[in-house]
Length: 181
Image (cartoon, rainbow, N blue to C red; front, top):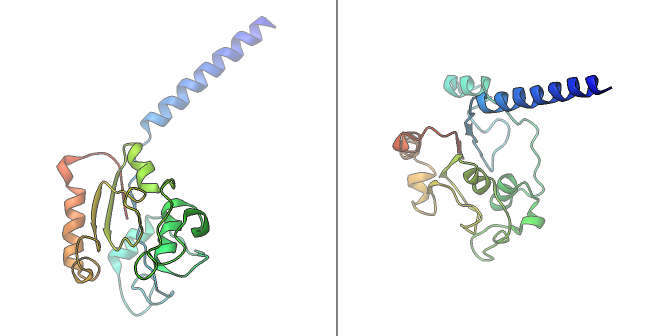
């Protein structure tokens, strides 16, 4: 009996050692989350039979694609808050649009994906439309949003957005994995 216990202990210790090495040697993965609101299935270039998008198609072939999304409210701010917190809007506090007239915001105690990822040494960035508040809940390490630039510069000008993406990717030779939204 003692012999089997000794063997079991050795197998257990070897398994723990093996798993810890696998975890530490796994390559870091980056996340690029492209979020488009107010669009239908054929209103975007990707997967459209009229517009050819070879670069986007190549990126998609190496990516996870969500084909069956659901939102309990088809409005920008609540949809974004749900995506970034994992909580329905009635639980995170973002009941409607964050701008006039109601100024809805998520509750201060809500934890969002960019904040959690930053705490785990993953670089976070947002380029484009943000439309969620408060900033302490939705804090990104790097942010170039419609809160800082007018929407014609950041939301609708692909040249500005491309420059910001390059700026984010080339930040001080930071080799940490990233989450770019």
